[in-house]
Length: 404
Image (tube, rainbow, N blue to C red; front, side, top):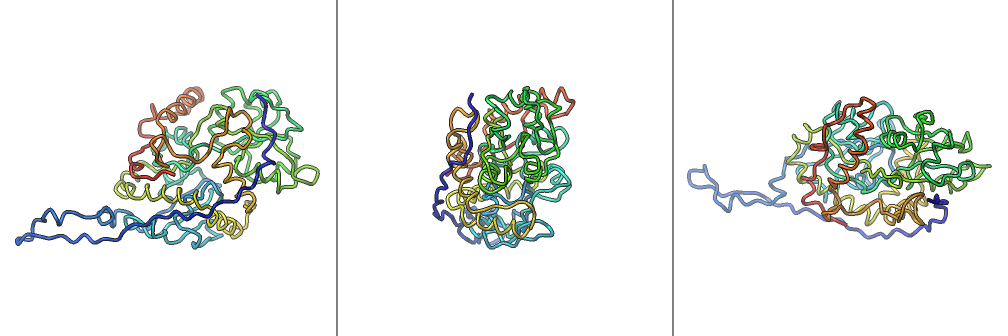
């Protein structure tokens, strides 16, 4: 299979500004009583869904994301909209939930950026967030130690990738990475790295889990190794904005994890099972509203992607976004890999409806296939995981979710 050359030829499509926000009707639930005052009539028991939902949600919730603000998080930031407040000290964005998504008594939301000191499963376990972005593969990996349940998807396909400099490494098939002997720089505890080692696509000796998400190592060493990243982000940066090769940007090649058979749900909205049970009535209202926010964001992304540029500037770290990067990344999210990703048979959009027509649910066969890949890997390594996929995800809150 021929590796894809680069995405330098992305056409930066204009992003349509089509507002697509719904609204929830306010309605009272006054009931009529009998003379005894102890029974309600049929008319009195009829209330709107919103009235029934009043007060079932906490006044405020905390969502832990898996990275700094980026376009792959846009549907969550849409819940607050562009008028929230970014705080450098807490590395968080907070504010009132936009009226159209403020269901069940929820009023405020705090969105926390990446934690460098602990995994998101631990953040949930310690009660520091109500929900967190966790890859479905990591829900499986952590399932023996932490009672997690994924309640909704963010993207449908995973844009995580391994990239390389095509002038230094001629990669025609995944096995060529192992044959190269070059390091693979990645975050620690990454499930798809476990998969690549098990498949023979890289060796344990090549694993370098010291990646911090910055471009420092790539620039310093001239890209003479392999590096993880997002096809929707770093590829554009290294080809257009980062001077890493002879003082200038340069093309890179890559494959996404899906290209090599790791069909993952990235950044699934995940909770501790006990907390999900506590908020079950709330989630029945909130999850469809959260997914409506994703649909609205994907229809009209620019207000949020522009705001995320500002938020990252406030955080004042190494992570940044630009209008050009966001436009190219959004095109890739909707159209799949322009020209074909490294080993893809055909382009696959990263954001699309699930099989049931909602932008929300998980496909049981996909989750089972992912489990079947990981179970023997972790059995051999001695990592205890759940005996099955039962309880690792639920679609019960997606019933009333919208589609795109």
